[in-house]
Length: 67
Image (cartoon, rainbow, N blue to C red; front, side, top):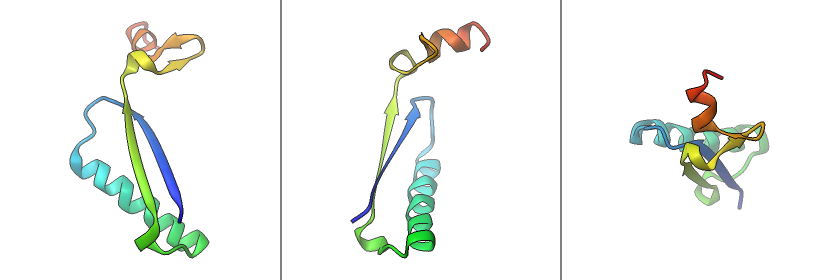
């Protein structure tokens, strides 16, 4: 049973976009590894930009500074 965890920043991904991610990730596992889509689990975690860091800074700060 494949388990895929997608982490994205919480910035307004629509329900339709998330559904497309779930469908696409599932189909990729079917196409590449021959996995059964009925037993493939996809979870999307949305993380506040204050809780996501790159290079020692939060994403919130990086974006504020134009990085």
